[in-house]
Figure (tube, rainbow, N blue to C red):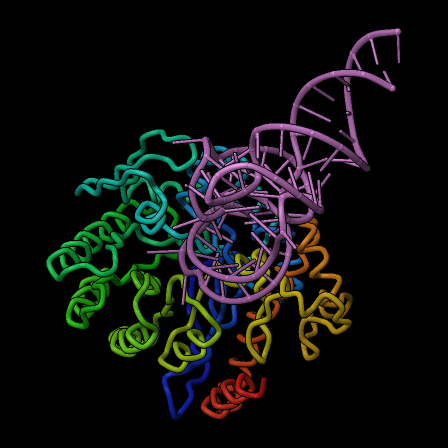
Length: 370
RNA sequence: GUGGACGUAGCUCAAUGGUGGAGCGUCGGGUUGUGGCCCCGGAGGCUGUGGGUUCGAGCCCCAUCGUUCACC
């Protein structure tokens, strides 16, 4: 089945909207949040856990899976879905950001990115063609074009060169693509310069890809700057394309960017913060390792319906965390991923009911009640 | 019983006779296209006890208590 983005409703007072992604492995209601499963696992969760948290699609990483265990191996298992036992949709990051952020040595040339593996130091060259070849071997439902992510802050010439190379690489990705049933998204670059973001969007739109992402944000810039850029970029992308904001973000970021027209998000925040003892609740953050919870009989969040909140006290979870018991990583991750999915569900309901602005206001009011 | 070694932060240990520190733990903060990692900060000490020498003692001397090893 070919990829399709079905548009449903749009809020009349802002850019927030509802949709459905149709992929080779099922459908995804948007706005959606994709838990990050870098190495073929959302850390600490089984596929059943992920599903029970409400997630419909997860993210995998080209860069990481290429280095370990290798895309040929995963391909021999029939792709990442079979390999990891997840039969829902998967989106894979292209590796551009990881090369930029993780690799010990990275040299970007026109042919591709030359880098040293952070695992064993071996030298690799990631070209646009290889990025597609890897993602097709993984059988990703939504593949991302290899992009060039410049550091923040960077000057205009550097950003312009990065976005123009991203355009050329995206063209090569499209030409290298063999499996048409797998969607291919382009990544809009351009740093913090609105006119360069416009240039990037126009160039990539000419390629008529299946969807578009905003890359190069949440790299250290202030939130307000990110919101302004999203507000600038979203209207540039015709609304029959799904719009994906990469690597974002906090619950506040998500509400603000849905408000500005974003359909898809991914972020390590719910899963990584869970492993570091930071939990999300409707009333704000809760640090389970704090001594104040040592004798607390209440669940993490009274209003949460996740498995963890239905069965365990803060005191027990804190004890497990202090003792570094393995179970705690699963229980806390379940809570945070459930929280994010619950947030997305509430957002969709609000848009469907035509009162997203009211929802947004209540979202902030609840946080002030603490 | 005799001889030796050692007593310093909650734990393991540093510190030429000259302002007592570190790691871990603990407490608090951070984490945005993932290394369960990591980073930042705080609290915590009459240096076993009592004397002595010295301008000055965690350090040198004596006694005492405790731990530990070796030998009767």
